[in-house]
Amino acid sequence: MREALFKTRITELLGIRHPILCGGMGPRVSDADYVAAVVNAGGMGFIVAAGFPDPDEFREQLRRCRQLTAGKGFGVNLYISRQAGGAERLQRQLEILTEEGVHCVETAGASPDSVIPVLRDAGIKVLHKVPAVRYARSAARLGVDAVIVVGNDCGGHPGIYGISSMVQAALAPSEITLPIVIGGGIGTGRQLAATMAMGADAVLMGSRMLVCEELSIHRDYKEQVVQGDGTESVVVKTGLRDHHRVLNNDSAKAVAALDASGASEFEQYKPHVIGALATQAYQTGDSSLGMLDYGPAVAFADAIKPVEAIFDEMLDDAQRALQRLSQLRSCV
Ligand SMILES: Cc1cc2nc3c(=O)[nH]c(=O)nc-3n(C[C@H](O)[C@H](O)[C@H](O)COP(=O)(O)O)c2cc1C
Figure 1 (cartoon, helix red, strand yellow):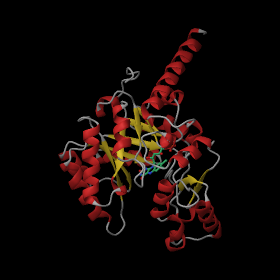
Figure 2 (cartoon, rainbow, N blue to C red):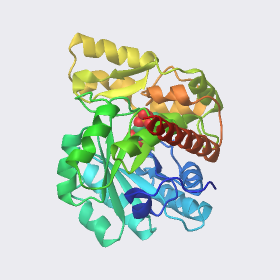
Figure 3 (cartoon, rainbow, N blue to C red):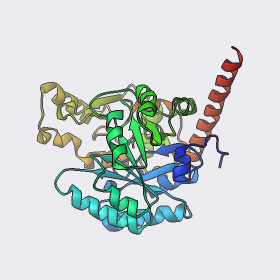
Figure 4 (cartoon, protein in one colour):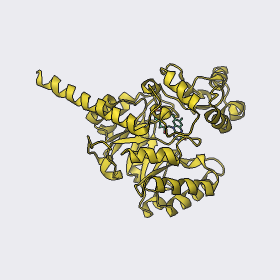
C-alpha cells in the first residue's frame, strides 16, 4: 500500500491511510468484496444495508468484510427513511451492525437524530451525508462525527438546490467546524489536492469507482462506463422534488417526460424507478432500464482496474498537483 500523502481529521477519526472515502452504492453494488478492497487500499467504504434486506445475508456480508479486511474497520451506509416501515427496518439494521462491530456509518436521507444515540453507545462513528451545507449545519448540531457534503455533480441524490461541488467545498469549511468530506464529481488526485487546499478533510467518490475490478456488477456495464464521458448523466425525478442523477437511459427519459408533464404522484413514476430494474441492469449489463446512479466523474474512469490501482493513480496525481502549486509559489 502507498505511503500516506495527507494526514487529516478524517484519516485520524477513521484510522485510515488516505483521505479517500467511497460512498455506499446500492442496490447490492457496494458489497463486502468491494468495501474490503477499498479498506485494504487505505480508504473507507460502506456496505449499503438497504441492498441486503434479508438480515442473515446482511450479517453474512459484514462478517465476510471483516474477514477480508483482517479486522480493519469498515463502514455501512444507512438510509434514514421517514416512510412506513422505515423505522422498523432501521432498527433491525442497527441491531445487526452493532452486534457485528462495524466501525463507522454513512447516513443519508432524513435526519440521523434517531440513530445517533445507539451508534454513539456502540462507539460507531457517524458521518452524515447531505446535498447542501445548510443541512450539514443541522447535522453538526445533532452530534455527528463528520459531515459529507455532496454537490450537484454527484451520482445519486444531489438535492433540490443544484449547488456545485466547487461551491460546497469552498463554503463548508467556513460554516462547519466538524471534519468535512466533499463529494460529487471527484475522480482525480488534483481534485483531492484542491479540496484539501480548500479546507476539506477527505473526498468521497462513487461514479469513478464503477469500473473497479472488485465490484460484482456486470463487466459490460463497466465497459460502458469506461466509454462514457459524463454527458450521458442526467438529473430526473424533479417532479417529485427527489432529484436523482442517473444514466440517461430509457427509464430516465420516461421519468424526464413525466417531470416535463407536471406529474407529481409517485404511482406515476413507480414503473420506471423500482429498484428491481437497477438490480437487473447491474446483473445483466443491459443498462436500458432502471434508475442507474451515474455522475459525470465517469469521465475519469478510463479502464477497469483494481481499487488500489485507482487510488495509486489518484495519489500520484495529487502529488503532481502539490508540486505544481509549490512551483507556482516559487515563481513569485
Ligand atoms: C451506482 C451508485 C449507487 C449509489 N447508491 C447509493 C446508495 O444506495 N445510498 C447512498 O447514500 N448513496 C448512493 N450513491 C451515492 C454515492 O454514495 C456518492 O454519494 C456519490 O456517488 C458521490 O458522487 P460521484 O458519483 O460524483 O462520485 C450511489 C452512487 C452510485 C454511482
